[in-house]
Amino acid sequence: MSTLKVIAGVLVGAAITGGGIWLSQNTPNFLSKPKAPQGQLFEGWVLNCSNEVKKCSLSQTLMDSKSNQRVANISIGNLGPKGESFMLLNAPLGIVVAAGVAYKIDEQEQVGVPVQHCTPDGCHAALPMSTNLQKALANGKVLRLGVLAPDRQSLSLEFNLKGFKEGLEAYHEKVTAFGPVNEITKVDTKKLSDQSDSPVDAEVSQETNLAPAKNAEKKLPPKEQPKNKNE
Image (cartoon, rainbow, N blue to C red):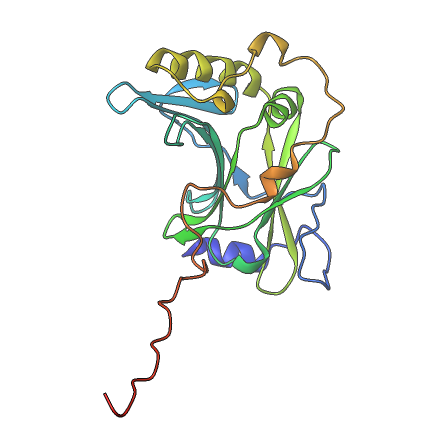
């Protein structure tokens, strides 16, 4: 897959020693937006909803301009069992999965998120859409998604947040119309422009309950007592 070559051949960060991800402001110039995205457009963001399954997604995709293959994607969706909203960070294949991914909104603190699993479409991480995170995204200009390449170099992929606030407002209108939702999904879109000095919730660095962790500890049955030879 060409994405593997892209990841191995493009250096946008700096050398790392501890296995962590360092997000730089440099981004590769081979990326482009999809030419004809399907859905309601908000600048670089696309809203798609299904009345049948009562699900919506607000997403932005980065493409390889040469091969026209998807490199990375960020998607907001009401994926929780009670309609809770999550942000999905979809990174390219060929990364160091154990390092997870990291994201940084403008000059705010960098946040690490564990990778849950990988599919032919890429490696996926998820975190709940807290109120603080929604405000940070709505008021932000750029989100940088960082991954670690096999050569231990960090790569930074840039997503433009222009149009996100308007897309998020439309997303909440659609989701609310589907019926009752959990508190975490609801946000006062009129207050999204209020600046908040609070950092993005620390809980976002923890694994979510969307899918069980692959390395989850299994409960073993109790050891059987040795039988008495006289029995």
